[in-house]
Amino acid sequence: MNTIGFKIKKGILYFLLILLGIICLLPFLLMLVNATRSGSEIVTSFTLIPSSHLKENWDTVFEYFNLFLGMLNSVKVAVPATLLSAYFSALTAYALAMYKFKGSRLIFTVILIFMMIPGQLGLIGFYNLCTKLRLVNSYVPLIVPAIAAPGTVFFLRQYMLCVIPPSLIKATRIDGTNELYIFHRIAIPMMSPGIATMSIMGFIGNWNSYLTPMIILNKNEKFTLPVMMATLRASTDINANQGAIYLAVAVSVIPILLVFAFFSKYIISSIAAGAVKG
Image (cartoon, rainbow, N blue to C red):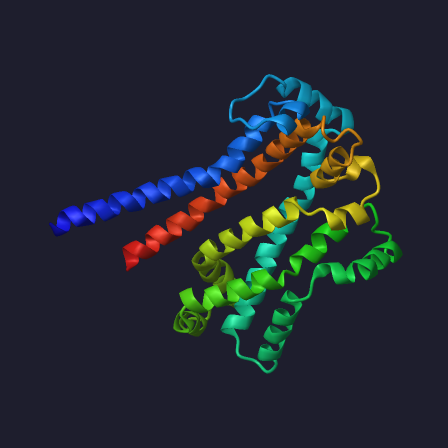
């Protein structure tokens, strides 16, 4: 009897999970369908059946901007910003977690404070600084500041304290191993799930960044994809271009899905390895 009850509960749970998965995928499916519909069809009706205006929407997008150039520009910003942020955040987290020195608590507190300050507050000063340094219309102001990611440092520090025993680090130090070797050969592999998670979040944030690129960049050929897409959303005939907007958004999601697919295997493999060890 208990076995039957367990199977019923398990079946209900699977049903609810499948239902939740369908609900989560519904907006994505609707985006793909609307990418094939005209603006008038989107405004007047709701359906999940694709239409025949895909080529028309594609031509409309390229009337306003070069979609592939925008994706390339976004890659130039998002990839180095994500990689540098993940590496230096992990390095900072390692120092804060594995070193006990005077002022470490103060530094960690300052990092927590900066997590609570909106970046938009310093935007005017940041633009003035970029102007004086002649970095306007350059990708440098979009990449270098992204390296300092307080949220990533906080998460990786807490994660490191949970997965890396201090005795392991002390033992390798006693053996005469230098700190950089310990960080690259021991800390980073053990932190890979946390780094992969924050890299996904960081890439999404850098890829979708709109306000700072809009202010720093002033040449059309330098615009990142979100800035280019804003020209389509700000068009005078926005209702007619609804399908083109959906198409541009659908294409812009592809790199995010690829990054998630690439990094998620590290998260899954690390969880599986931990389960085997346990």
